[in-house]
Amino acid sequence: MTKKRRGDAPIHPGEILLEEFLKSYDPPVSQVEAAHRMHIPKVRLNQLIRGNRGVTPDTALRLADLTGTSAEFWMNLQCRYALWQAAEARAGRKESKIQPLAKAS
Image (cartoon, rainbow, N blue to C red; front, side, top):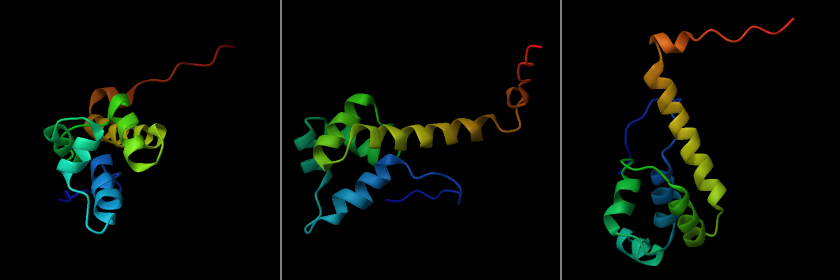
């Protein structure tokens, strides 16, 4: 289930997991099977796939083992997504106009 996003928004790691990994097998790997292999509750995996939960370091390690990628791959995806969300949330608010420190003379 793909969420609608703006053109410049990064893709949530859960969507990448679903589209690029779980659905790429024939037959596709179910969320129940993936959660079982990762030793996590299926609700936790479903929340991640739906974009309602982020990737934690623990989840990144489990995803790396499941997919044959690295934990850094999953953490970088999450970091990029979280930074974009934070920038969107603060756009136009006072703290978006923080004065930088002046260089010492």
